[in-house]
Length: 531
Image (tube, rainbow, N blue to C red; front, side, top):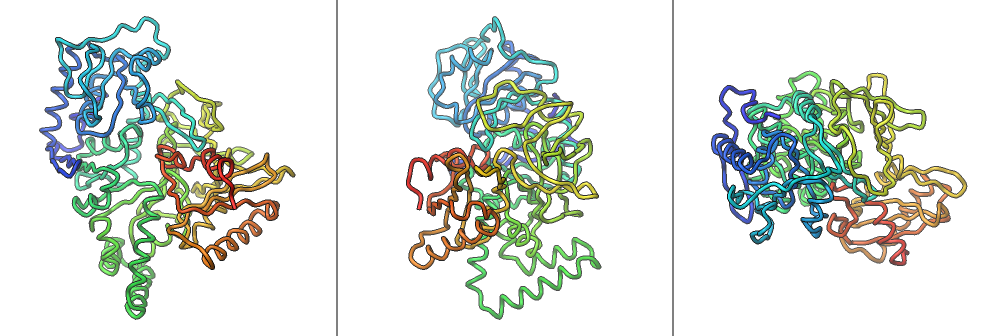
């Protein structure tokens, strides 16, 4: 699959800014493409060609990106292992997945291997490395296979998915067209490249001649200020954290100044229908300069959609005039629906991209039909409560939603996260969680079913330590919300209030930063005594 040389510009002039370990290095498109070409030759010299399966494991690095593009250009098939596989024996992975070769990221702490089938990225030697013969491939490839990837859903279990070349090309074209990506853009990355979403996005940057900025996740805020990107894709948890920090800063401003800013902001928003969008955006940028500066001052598009996000957060960014857009997609399908700068319907995930036909099944499940889904089949599926599946020529997403007359999609929740009480009453947790997260003290709220539907568990993460009247008030509010929105559980509620962060490291979030409900249930309501 050709990426190098596919740029829309006659002369590619994108730059890759790489920031790691306190150091920043910039690579021109010429530097990058020359390194990719050199890596292709090294890979070819040891026999890697179209259809060869190559394992990749390790942290983000410049050579990770180079290697991925080189394999893509050769039409080899990468199998990308996330960090959850770091303790797996490489020989076992090679045998289990029918690999011919394995590459370890140079960003990992590794020593040189004497195994001729394993190399560190950038250290392939034709005299010392060779391919391992695959006698019987348990997962044979097809001409349309681009990469094998692993994704974890809300249950935490792994799904192995085969990414389609045709699907990747479709994503690059439709997603970038919807958001008008051009050579004037600069896209920032901070999440693992083992996520297919990030790889498709840097493929798109190369295709559309946009600059690429890569920073560690711990350096995202610094990276935004330093490199002033125009395009950001981030999970709700990031935008929600920034929202709360902005509100804390706003609270320190005098009441008179806050009132003046609010009045000026409202006046501009009221005029948005009669003045050009760029003009109103420029005015709002001046009014809320401090908030814009957090994102670098040049931000043009801010995408979210990997998990639920509160309506108040979307409204907050709209009030500031910051370009927050909620979208919807899965690794199985790619991005399906998007809001855009010219049609941003707050509280929805927008309209389908060209080529996506969205319908709602009788039970409310979202079904997507498209000629070029990002995934063409599963190759590995652990026991899981996930029910995303290919059926009748479509993808049954496992998500619940409804469509408006103009085709705009609104998400309701996850089908398998529905809590069924022992009386048969069904409760969808996401809407209740969104209401609870409106409280300024609440960073995260998660509902889970307990005792075979006899009771409801609510885990609430607070932004700081609370006790006394604050604790009691929050507890009363949680119970009131449950009474109002899930009355059947009002007398069967178990509550856990904690300061503990929900992270992928402690397992409360999946690698894709979605809530791991199974882990939340175990951690707060089965291993410990909830209040």
